[in-house]
Structure formats: C-alpha cells, structure tokens
Image 1 (tube, one colour):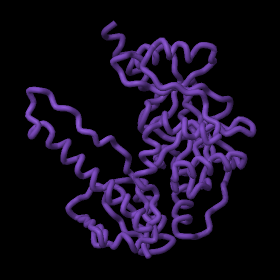
Image 2 (tube, helix red, strand yellow):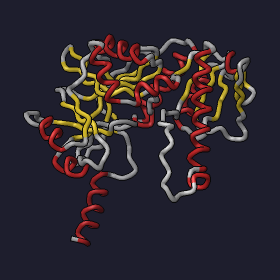
Image 3 (cartoon, rainbow, N blue to C red):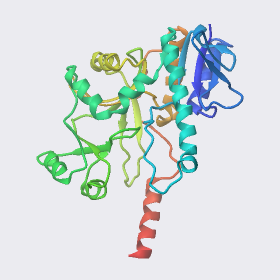
Image 4 (cartoon, rainbow, N blue to C red):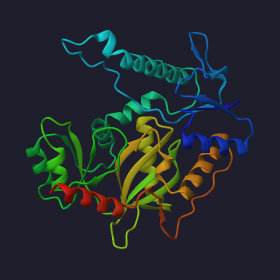
Length: 336
C-alpha cells in the first residue's frame, strides 16, 4: 500500500517529505497535485475515488499539505454589475474548492487515515470558537477578546502588563499589541482582531503526530539590537506539556497539528492550533529533523528521540530587519 501525498506541485515541505519517505521505503509515495492540473485528473462517484490513476481507497494513509479551509460564501454583487462576467473567476475557484473538500472528506469516509481532513481545518478556522471549546474542555487558554470596538480593547488592556494580538483567522504569529497597533488596527469599519493576555515563559511550537509530539521548539522573538538577532528556535523535551497537547489534538480530531503554547511551571497555556503545520517557519536543521521523524512515523519506522539544543538556531531571512528599518526611515524622511 502507498502513502498519498496531496499537496501543490511546488510545495517545498511536501517535496522534502517525499524524499524522506522514499529514502525509507522506495516507491511508497503517490504524489497527487492539490492544484488539480490537467496532468493529475481525479474521479469521484459512489463506488470509487481515484486521483491520477491511484485508487484512493487503497492508500495506507493520505497526507494533505498546503490545503486550508476557506469560506465559500459568494459575496452579493453590486446592482449595476454583470454577475456572469465579474464573478466567473470566483465561481470557478469556489467549485474547485468544493470538489477538493468533498474528495478529501470522502477519503475519511472510505476509511483512509487522513492528515488532516477538512473538518479539522474548519475546527481551527474559527479561532475564537476554538479557544472557547478548549477552555470548556478544561484546558488552560489565556484570557482573550475578539473585537473591533476601541472601548472594549481599552478595557481589556487595563491592568494587564503585556497584551498580544493576531488576526482572528488564518496563519499568524502573536505580536505585541502597542498603541501603534491599536491606532492602526481597531476601528468599527475594520475586521475584528484577536487579543490575548500573556503568560510568563517562552512561546513553544509543538508538532504533533496522532497526539504525540514529534518536535517541540521554543520560539524567541527577533531582537533589533544592536547586535541584531533574528528569530530563533531551540528543541526542548517539555514532558509536562504532553498530556495537554494530546487532549487538544483529540478535541479537534487532528492527526497532524502544530500547537503554540507557553509552559509556565506545570501549567500548559495553549495559544494556537494549526491544521496545516508550516515547516518553513523553522530553521533548516529543525526542518530536516521534523521531516525525518514525520516520515518515520508515517511508515511505521522508529522515530528518533528528541535532541534538545544547547544553542538557539536562527532562521535566516532574506533581509535583516535593521536594513529594512533604515529603508523605512529613509522613505519616511523624504515626505516628512
């Protein structure tokens, strides 16, 4: 039986995972193009589901990368706009997404272990409802607020030493919420944002396979310096967090998840869940470790034990933030 690897053709994380899987079991991967190109035809009916000639029901499992939930509601057209012209591209994209959504759900219905099916993406899409669901289940979630009302934002910040923010959906990292962010982001005509109280300790990213950590890495925010330090990570063991992470994965039924949390003593505070973990966010060495462990877990081979780092590993970026800041200040000076 083969492993179905469903991802866009140029998805770099999927390309690395395919190489790691093939190194363990040559020929075990059926690569399926999530972009539905003409070279990767699919078929779905009551009796069978196939993709590029592969019988999907016969797969050992299916790994989905580069897929995310999107709201398929069609916006209302303007009174003087031609629906048949201005909505064509949107309708075509919606129908493609609808088919993919159905196909991936059908894998789970036919008994194929899927990492992850669309239901997990939907659970993680509505972040505010997700956090309340975790809280009701007894997990520790920091005090949060989702709003675009300035009075409620000011009341939430009152008495708190540090508040962080992120968009209410999608992939993002928590950032400091200062007066500049408040003035730029909070208004009735703008979408609500998500605010959270902080907890002492470093933010940690946990990558879970079937509820068990494959890699836990603490995250350090960049420091503009001088000397400038880029964002960095260190692999850690953190066994006291394992039970809470497993419970979070169980609640959303996610087989392959990224969980962002802060470990404060014996308390695990969960800040985020992501149904499509992004390996690109990690330094190259941690990407390689995680990919090898994921490949081993998918093929049933022994998974390497955690290797805590003695020194932080920086994630290279295209431009140093100091250089960007100089450029921004230069541009600002021209018009001030």
